[in-house]
Length: 80
Image (cartoon, rainbow, N blue to C red; front, top):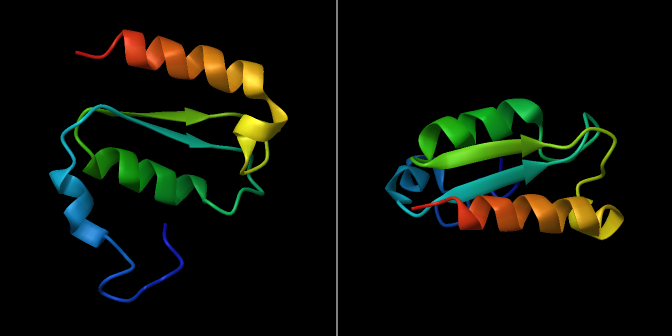
């Protein structure tokens, strides 16, 4: 997940304390955020959803701003 593996840099189990709705977004299989890490993070963070956008780079919001905007708005409007 994080490249900084020090105690201060890598959140490890502390992400389990996140209680706000969280949308986890990643790009394609070449993304620097591996799918396995995204799935693990989604499983640790309560009330989170994973959005995997195929053919998109890590900076999906720059390459596909319309997709990013629509989905993010939808996520925010449908969270309690």
